[in-house]
Length: 485
Length: 82
Image (cartoon, rainbow over all chains, first blue to last red; front, top):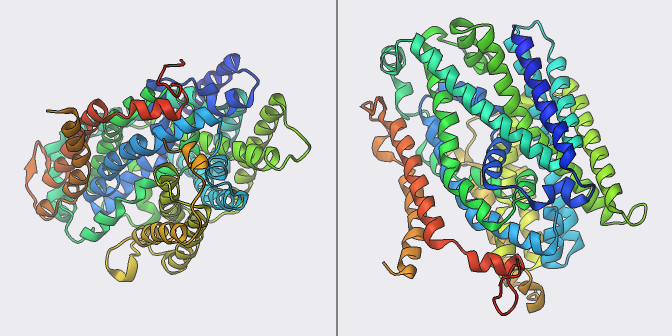
């Protein structure tokens, strides 16, 4: 039953993606940014689905199981505040400049803003290196989830293969429009299924109040922040959601908006979407302590799956599996397409490998790169260690720390290529320094103070941008005027 | 309220919300509010307040003119080209 539901869901996703192909005009702009025609509802749903990974369902409940209610303030309400701010101040301007100048990638944007090929190439390398582990986590997550839900009956490589194959199918078929349509469906699925799962399980536990009373008897420390989270960790963790401003896949969705006003719905309603997904996840993780006390390490990651197996096996397990697959694929599709876009536009087209690229060849190449990227990631998933999951917060740290480059490009007339280069190089240096010291320690903070490394890397990046720009010659007014009115 | 003042208050709400996100005052409070632990219900309500703040930001501070100019949807004389 479980596998039947999952296969039925994957088939539905493929049908939507392939159907979107009927609307595809064979141009690069249509394939890579949906011809800039996406409306407010689809933009909201696809941005949210792209941003939320399977962590919002499985990881959030596992973290809540371990450290309690504090996980909501740390990861959910911080995103509810910071992500709409980034959409308002950064996303709208990126869309407007991208529309007028015809940009499809961040690297094109940066090259044009500062007239520097080298800065563009440096950014390309950093973005690809930060994004690859993120893709790998998604593909491996598919395998892990299928194994957990089927109680080990399905091998992990099968889940990874399913996720990879379905994503390749609908992304190459419909491009960004197909991705956006499928994401809208998938986002609705994982929001709905998360809520249904929570209602069924909480009802079985006698309601929220009774379940909280039982947690309070055995683990009262989980109902407060206490020592589980350092106040400085909460303060500095708020910078992590700024990564949404530099993710290549989010950038592509911004460019796909039909008009500036399309952004109003995502700006206002994003916190609602976050609450709908995260409140059930956090409560279920908390209540996992009632029936499954004492899980530690990797075992605690499966607390939600264990609860479903106990309270609502078979159909609900299949539906939850579909919901988690939805969360995984709605990120993986946009990430793989954005990498395909970058390789096509920023490398092959920019350096004119094989001569000029006409529209049809851009689309063909984009599809080939998507197949290559996802195929390579699938092969890597067969040999990668499970510890790769710890890389996600490091990936976010890197992306968040690049935001000063984007903000300077959009708002600071005096910013220069030297400043942008200094900022990116500072991110590389500080990120590496902290990564070497902190990898393997989930609670790592700067000098044990509770401050997350992102705060230092972000500050260093900002400072380097300012100093590097002021020490170099200002850009020409004509160049600046194309980006800042 | 004048448009300029409304815009300023909409912008000023953002750093204020950033500070309010760090609710040290409920850090170790084991009480409940609206049926949830107060440290959780505070942040659920906080998210609702963010929705209102963003709604107001979009209403009074939407940079439509700047975005139209940047997107090339008005010409140099301010005439709509769409």
